[in-house]
Image (cartoon, helix red, strand yellow):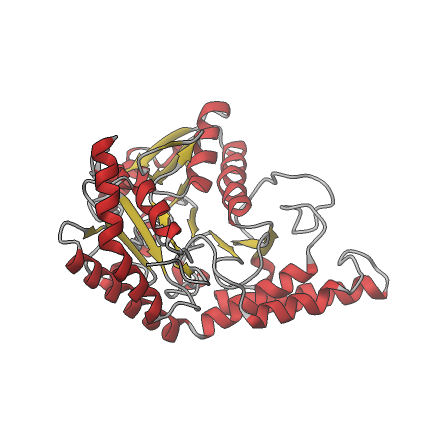
Length: 396
């Protein structure tokens, strides 16, 4: 099988192509001059675009416009929430040094949490998950109730970026709220795929980004309740509520708002479309490679509809990825790569997999451009690719 002229792109959880409506909204602003914080006519025009985009986002995210703090993306928003809330809570009460999160968070949360532990005296507790990657709420409850006055914040992602597990966010809030503990959730993977409502969820801070939902790179937001104190990471002009400084990227914000509005509007139809493709891929790949097995919950109500995470015993995930890439099929592994050395997935390790199992997986993720032909291409390629990967491992 020769590689197709156009790649079969199944890595939408990493980034998804921009939606035409977002491209149009962004390009409409690219040639216009004006800093949204300038007082002259050009500045006021840019400010109007920003504030109209903020209102569009607020409606889509079930929040107030004033609760949206624009950032450069999900990583900055996660850092702002984790560090900013920790600093503010500890400043108000030096006893508040504990940060509770799960062992399956994205590194945009785990790394700043560990930085706080190493450099700021935070006491980090990585809460356990079950074999599907879902938080043990009883463990969270026990941890908070042991000493609620010492907890600075809880951060639990909405949906896992590797295996697709949905977390019990509302249960987390129900446990934390009686003790006055703020809850942050990274909803980067969930937005546009499952219902995500800021007010309804009860969380105090919520991370979203543009490029996962058909918007541009380099723009996102932290949705944060006005009563939640957050110390800034970056000081300067204080453009966003004095919480985040920096000249606002008006074209990107316009594209971001257009993409989120469309993604939320089409969520039900889109979710069914990608879930059908995902289920078809899992069924057919597991039939073709009997040893293959999916990770994550069996219950479709407990997982993101667009993510399929499959283990292939006897293979290295990196080998599978490169062999598929040579055939024009683009996906990802569940493991990180550091200094050129593949690392086992921290998510799979937390779910109870051994190191071998945490290295032999692939993630296929679907988006608005995905088709049945993409699934067909994977099914056609998977048997020879697995055979070559196993042979390479035996030789190695």
